[in-house]
Every structure is written in structure tokens, then in C-alpha cells.
Length: 372
Image 1 (cartoon, one colour):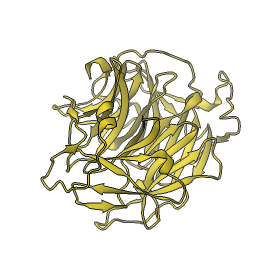
Image 2: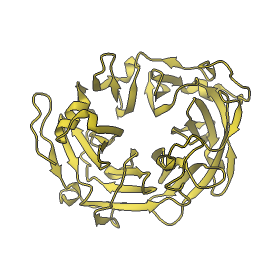
Image 3: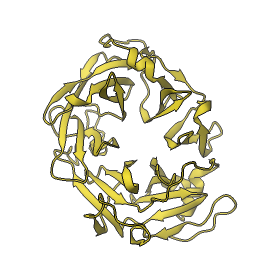
Image 4: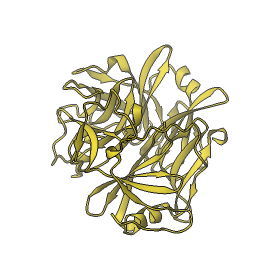
């Protein structure tokens, strides 16, 4: 990587081997990490856990990596963010142009409030960048503390769907750290391919794998091969549920207690949010003592769902929604935020998102939750 001065508003891109730092002590969770090159082949998903540990989903290798960022300096509130021509500035920092990169995912370190980006270059090389106070840092993926676990029964590298589209990329569709486990959605090589994994961390040889079935109202059928695209964990009536969103766009609840190793689980469809769309990101936030969920989409504006509406919806949708784009079940609001494709919680009062504006410009912005 080259060191480049980008101009006003963008600072220096520094190549940093973050795990070589000696300023941060090793935690109990990272004490057994290896140090070196984890040989990550792709970065599809990012999610932070405790102690500044960044979990990376690599679909090509069908593996989850835990990276020791040593990024543990606590900051309670982030500064506001409003960066125009974001893709061009990222590309320039890497010595290339915006048409030769793709931003695959974004995650905010809840400790430092630094934003991390998974970038894919045209030659397929994965790049991990962080952004703080206008400074881009290229996080070394060749000299870092790490731990790795390979997914069991991963979908084959040459697998294709009935339209001939490669499916290996969906071996990992989303990941989240929750109560000592890394939760992973995606596809397996099993008969019922849609899969949800629960992997204890620190990584061991154990990984629970449940197969999933949903009623897809827009398709008018039960499905077992479509992967969850994005998910969250929600608690209702003292019970934890996996809240999962799929392409075209059903919202489905699974009791977490039902997602056991080797068990085939049928979810409860609580909403059809409209065909012709695919969910991209899902986050939660609180406003005036109430909890809400935001969901970014490919072909619809950001949707806002009220926790109470979800908790109060006791029905199971089993009918077909035959009219294109029509929604049913749990209601939602469309926020005036179209073409948002990455989104995360920035701090207790703000979210951060990447958006393509009406003029075609890609921007990185923060927004107070009180205005959402």
C-alpha cells in the first residue's frame, strides 16, 4: 500500500501492523491467538465482539476469523461524520479508483467508535480499513493476532443454484457475536441448505448447526434453500428469538432454544415486507425509551420496525401475497433514506451509514437516532 495525502477532510493512510502493538495487554480471550498471516481469502461480513476483537466471515475459505485489533481505547461518543465522495476517497487511499473497489461490509468498534470497512479490490484481494477522525488506516492481514474456525459441512466451492449462480459466497451471509458465541447464517451442503450456526468463542471444535425452513409469502411456498441475509437477536416475553430477514422480503422469528445442532427448525413468518427487494443490514436502537429496528435494503428505503409491534404480533403468516411488492404482517415505516447499503450503531445516540445519493455520490454519514 502507498502512503497518500488525499486533501482537506481526508488524512493519511498508514500501513499499520496493529497486532504488533505493545501498548495493549493481551486479554483472556486472545491469549491463545496465533500471530502471523491468517491467509484470509475474502471478507464478506464483519462484526465486533468484546475486547476489540473483530470477527471476519470469509466465504471463500468457509471460515470465521477472530482478529485482535488491540483497538481498546474507550470513547463514549463519536464525532459527527459527513464525508462526501466516500468511495473515491477510499480508492484514492489505496492508490486506485472507485470503479476498482467494492465495499463489502462495515462495522463499528463499540469501544473506540472506529469504523472498519471490508474492501474488495478488482484482483480479489481483501482489504481491511479503519477510519477515525478522518484517518484511514490499512489494517495488516499478514501480521496480526488471530484465531480461526472452519465451518463444518460448508457448501461446495463449485455449487450453483438452479439459475447457474455461484452459491459459495452464501456460505456466510451474516455474523454476530452474542453471549459468548459467534452466530453465523448461510448455506451448507446439507439437503436443507439454509443453515444457522452457533460457535462458542474462544473457538473450539464444537459448532452447533441447525437447518431452517420458512414460509415465503411472496413465493407462496415453504423454503429451505434461501439463506438468511441479515439477522438480529430479540427478547420477547423472557425468550430470545432469532429475527431473520430473507430476500423478497420475509421477516421470520425462530426461538433461539430451538436452534440446536442437527435439528430442522421451522420459523414463524411475521411479516412480508415486499417482493423485489433484498435486506442488507439490520441494527437496533432506542428512542424515548422505546426500541426500534432499522433495516437497509437493495430496492427500498431504510425500514423502521417498532419492537412492540413485533412483540404484539402473535399470528403466523401462511397465506400467499400474490400482488407484487405488497406488504403484510408486522407494519413498518419507510424512512427518507434510500440506497443505504451499509449501516451500524455508532454510539448510544447515533447511527452511521453508507449511502448512494440521488446524484450518484457515495457518502458516509452519521445521524442522531432522535431523528429516526
